[in-house]
Amino acid sequence: MPRQKKNERPATLAIPQTIEQANDFLRRYGHEQREAERIRSGLKEETERLKAAAVPQANAHDTLAEELKKGLQVFADVNRAALTESEKLKTVEVPAGKFGWRKLPASIVIEDEEAVLARVKAQELLQFVRVTETLSKQAMLKEPDLALSLEGVTICQDEERFFVEPAKLVVKLPQLQAPAARRSVAANARKRA
Image (cartoon, rainbow, N blue to C red; front, side, top):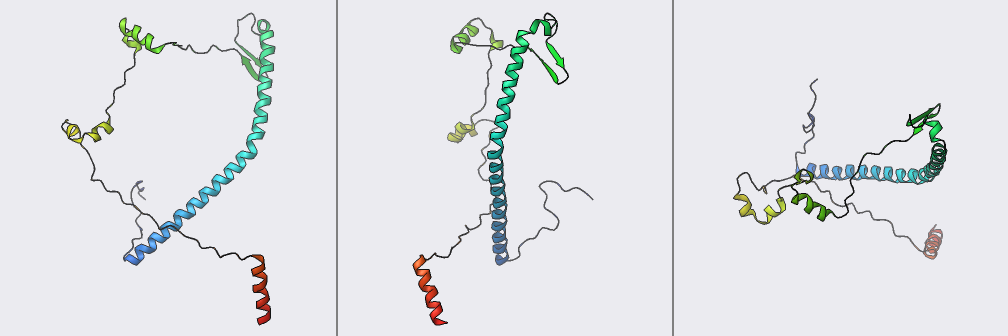
């Protein structure tokens, strides 16, 4: 069976034949959107509830792990010569894993970027300068006549996109009566019976 492409419509696509059917499609479309959103909302709420319960537990373990790491580092620093065989090794392996020291990659610290940039340009060390040039489409839209005079520039504005916007669902809840009003309604109902 040939595979269906992503943007290809299924062979059994239902198509409304009348405006009434189109209205029904739109009503059902709105219902399906609301159901999907209700499910996503429930998932989001459940995720937040689970996260709220799990984060404090995880944080307690993180805190304990960090304390253990600091204690291990103090032990390693005090016993470094013996553990590294006088700096011949950088990693100490034990049955539970390994620990040791790693050199961090070099980094550049620049105190006054403008002053350093000026010195780099003055000394023509342009390999240390990064230049990024891009066209400003916003500026071109502000001056469309000038932008269109450039070869290779086209302004697209006649594109249409189909949209579907279901009517907002309004739910009318029954009005609640005050307790005294409910008792009098119940009393009147008993009198009639």
